[in-house]
Amino acid sequence: MTQTGKNQKNGAVPKEVLEQLNENDHTDMISVWKKSEYARPSQMEISPKEIENALSKVHRRIEPHSGKKSIVGNIPQYARYLVAVVALIAVTFLFFFLPRTASVPYGEMATLELPDGTLVEMNSGTTLRYNRLYRFTDRTVELNGEAYFNVASHGHPFIVEANGASIEVTGTEFNVRSWRGDQQMETTVSVSEGEVLFYPKKLKENQITLRAGESSRWNPRLTEPANPEPVTIEDITAWRNQRFVFRDQTLISILYELERRYNATIELDVDGVEQSTLTAYYSEQVQLESVLDDICTVKGLRYTRTTTGYRIFK
Amino acid sequence: MNRKTEQQIKTWAWKIRKSDRKAFDEFFRWGYPMLVRFAAGYTGQKSSACDIVQDAFVILWQKRSEIDPNRSLKAYLYRIVRNLCLNHLRDSSGTVVDSELVQGEAFSSDELSIESPGNSNGSLDQKFREWIYALPDRQQEAFELSRFDGLEHDEIADVMEISPKTVNNHIVAALRQLRTFYDEYQKNINNDL
Image (cartoon, rainbow over all chains, first blue to last red; front, top):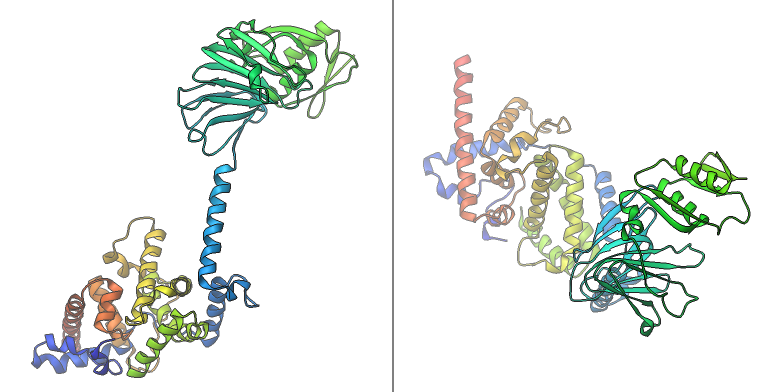
């Protein structure tokens, strides 16, 4: 501290102040200074108890594991830094490798824009996972459900992984349908623009090339994806406009889709019809009940409301 | 501040730097009441003043390795408290508060006692309090730190982040203004008689 400390005893006027004042004024100024002694803005008293309470609050904050001396207390300073640095690296590492997940609830649809500008339209109940370094290390996404991809051109190939299948592209538009709950674990890929490579994740050499207007499917019982077949891409992607197109689709898979799309439970209380197929086409948005009406008419079934949705029976 | 305390604070500074908790506790007990009163001058409320001062001590402990024992630890702590108070006022008012604007309006709380124990001349104290509020904010800050918190000029300079010369100018100007107020007040009393 400064040499003035000696001069300023018990609230006398600081000597720097006096030096700057006219000597004739000194007496008055000292008097004013003295008179202001009790004009302290906040006169509040702080009791010793309050001080101790405040101190123990501070103790708890600077020593999270209060009570016993913390283990950290005996570790030398540099070791603590080391631990902190290692922890920081580990957390950063984990952070970057924890995947990001985007999910669409039942009854809704959503479009996701990935960091590289790739657009993913996701059907109801679909989940997409990708790592935080997406775009820097690779462009791999993991799909459960159905999505339409409009892939931006970029250095790394864009890869969709689903139910053990891989779809690899550079920049194009295509639809992938691959529900994890699907009994066949089937993945269906349909291309609307450009080309994609389609292969079992573990057998890249068994790849096929799909071109615009072609579709193929693969499931883990097949060594390679089925031969490409021409499809009407608008039918495949009808879901994007809330429409439905079912072509020779099994009843059970149609019901699952309706459950997701309308966020309703549909019980099938009839044996032996799950795998029977159905073709239906709805050019615009429809009520769930009119779809059920049609299904029941065609299959000779009936349905009734339940608390959470519908039950189909004979 | 007498020489003994000055020496004591310097010792505390050394010890706290070396993570001595006992010294920290002593320094806390010594400084807490005074800092709470200082903080209350900004926040107008005892509860937030207490919180802020506790925050400041936590910060002091966390940054103890940065303590320079050759500089005033007291000023260092006052500066932390002052900055926390200004942040608090800025955040709680929702607008950017220039430190110049801070003090006058901060005093609306009834939590602040205007009792002045040990002095019978209550109304003159009250007058002085009003006159001090009427000072420009920087003058008021410098004056109060010098008059009531017993800080040296170079400590006040540290706290307010201005030069010791400016500190002196503020205090001199404040004192001149207070004298003017006081003279007018005396004149009025004499006229009334």
